[in-house]
Amino acid sequence: MKTLTILFASLCVLCGQLPAAKLPNILFIFADDLGWKDVGWNNDGGFIETPNLDRLRAQGMMFPQAYAAAGNCAPSRACLLSGKYTPRHGIYAVGTTDRGPKAKFRLTPVPNTQQLRTDFVTVAEALKAQGYATGHFGKWHLGSDAKGTGPRQQGFEVSPPELVSPGDGGAEGEPGAKRGQAGPENPKKIYSITDAAGAFMEKNRDRPFFVYVAHHAVHSALAARPATLARFRDKAQSAKGPHVPALLAACIADMDDGVGRLLKKLADLGLDQNTLVVFTSDNGGPPPANNEPLRGAKGGYYEGGIREPFLVRWPGKVKPGTVCDAPIINTDLYPTFIAAAGGTPAPDLDGENLLPLFTEGTTATKRPAIFWHFPGYLDGPVARGRDPVFRTRPISVIRKGDWKLHLYHEEWLLDGGRAALATNKAVELYQLSKDIGERTDLSNKETAKRDELLADLLGWIEKTKAPLPTEK
Image 1 (tube, rainbow, N blue to C red):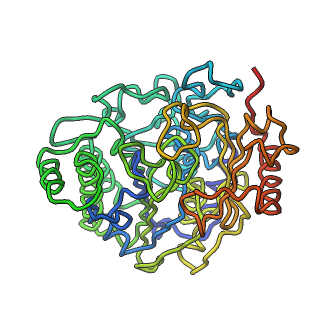
Image 2 (image 1 turned 30 degrees about the horizontal axis):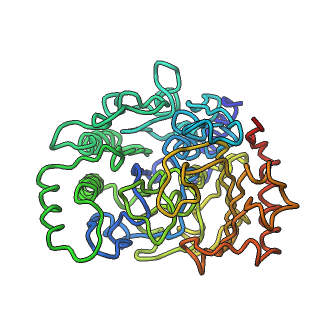
């Protein structure tokens, strides 16, 4: 099946819409743990500084309602690269789905898969079949070369192993302060990742390329160049009102500097006018990030765990300084990149091609809803979370129009289900256009809307064969 899908992609190019010489380059920059608020235009106090991302925003389109397909690193990346929701590939968490005090589990979680299976055709494999040079630089977190599931076995011609953190092979990642570090002037490997990606673009300047820049920043352990950190510590002395810690702001600033250097390299090579650039993050910010007014944080499925900054620039295609309010999700990038490259997205992808939003002035996607599924436990409660023990318990979520419904499987499966919805707290319903902070649960007030979204969500669970946790 995988071979047939790659052959299909190749035939799309041979028969297709765009001659190879005119195919656009694709530069995808993926931050790690950068929350929706952790960028200059969303940071009300002005303490965080992202001048290069701010400039990218002015040059292209910003999506204020963009989402990651999961609340954690590994599943979000699996969804992105496969174009599939979590039930399709079974990667739900980093490491395991039973993280936390087992005595507090009310259900037995669905076991986690830690590596992206090679029978999936990744976006890199599909673009490679369309004639693209493919390079990956930085974090992987979906397997390893030793296990046959590393970047070079999943469609990337180049993936310098020294830029991938040891322990990035799908488990917990490298522990402690060593994760992604490379010395005081190269924190989180920001500059070695940037330079390697730039060299790849230069080497492949005469053919279309897909460059996946997967930063380790701003994941813990936080690090920044000494001069950057000193500047933000000085700034903190005179800052008015609450702000994020100086080290977090400095780490973000260095990551932003890396983005600026990469975009300058693109311009110096004369490739910026024919390159689609996309920037986003893999999940919401963890503490000490301040996600307010969004509720929750990384690992959970309130907005603070999954809503992300998202920018796209494509000169001559995307109108500068524009905003699109359509809800989108990172599974959409796979079919979008394939379409931008002149191909036809495979029909079994869960995402939607966003080119009409990017280039045609369309303001809404065709799909009725987007979904999330996490059938396990993740410890570490956060501010304004639902639970005093866990960041999240087993949950499925739907966003449809302005409405978002959370289905909590413990209460649904053990406390009476549909018959007891008025009292068992199995669902929460929010109208995001009026309540972005998910403060007012309308599940017992807007019962018709609740039942509509619940039916859609249950139908999706059945359609995708999403596995559910079981009684202990």
